Image 1 (cartoon, rainbow, N blue to C red):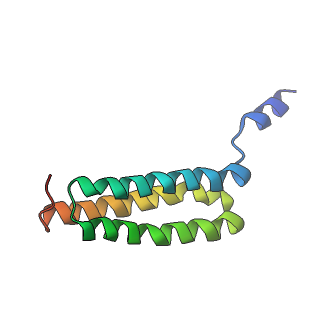
Image 2: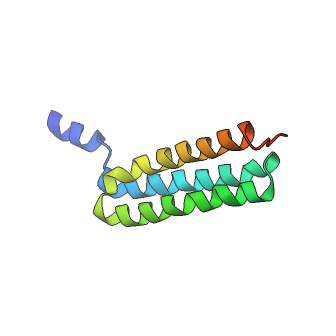
Length: 95
């Protein structure tokens, strides 16, 4: 009985992993659009273009590796942070 309860409490990432990843990519799109507060139009476009490979990777991994889909938004967040760091530090994006 105890083992059965534990199994039911574990996350079923085979089924929910792609959905968690999709929610994370939607948050990344929102972050990219919100950069319009301080970045020029081409900076926002650069952010959106950088998210496209993340979405394509998510679509491919949803069938092949559904458990790994949870990590895809974190990869996108690192890319988003890098673009922001370069934009604010070197290109002079300011509010």
